[in-house]
Image 1: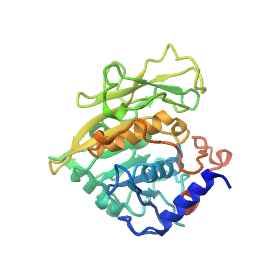
Image 2: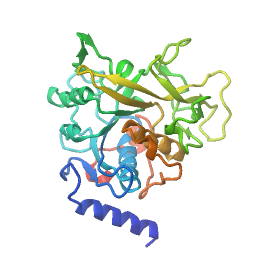
Image 3: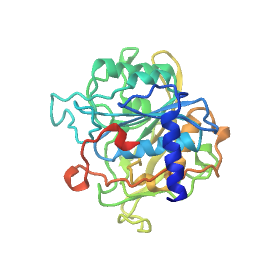
Image 4: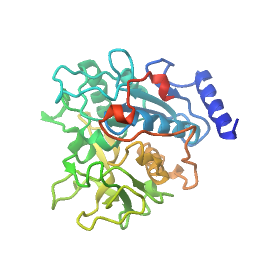
Length: 340
């Protein structure tokens, strides 16, 4: 047995045996107790609820790193079908008007210090969406990945002074308008914004590349809202290999930025949004470090960000391809335990 295998088994057994985690063990979600590290005593809830980019694989991977290498207690919640299986193949209401999604454990947002959200066009029952609204009003931070900027389709009953809140535009700073890159045909190279290199989220961040394409989140000729600070631009490439050339017909657009959001209670929250984030994008150590650094920043721990703290995988990570051809890709409903 290799040292890596022994370390992985010890981590899993320690996680199973621990009683110090703020959320009780339950087969409907995953918990990862934090070890020693700057995040000790802070609780992150990660929500995997989309159908295309394999968040059911990437968020447990990030939780393992955040817990064992950085000290955060982590809880991973999943969209599940009626059989209690993690099911990325579920339809959305555009495809089936009878669909309502189910994410067991959303009540634990009340104990979260940070939420990492990766959802896509989901529709939640009233009792579950209420937990999301309450979190937005709490002033606690949000880290949103890729499709989260169009994360909710129907039943988002949130308004400030009588004006409906648009989750993508108002909370995160932009929503998906179109694929600026070529969908499932090219890839993205991350470019640090000139003048942003000293931002703590970029500390130690090197090469960023991934096989997903660049999103456009504002109309051509426009820009990010003035309350957003762009950190990384995404340059579409001419192919799906790391060293492919930039596409000269496609400008680089923002793919990572910060902002603040103030809910109806007047409490301001730090927000970080990254529009890369497929499971295979997260094979990039640069993207992992960017996201983990952003978790520190969201929590006001930017002074604790260390360029040399490991963002290496904990245990195996062999993500499936993105897409909706589930049979060909190998995506099937699985129990929550399959993703530990």
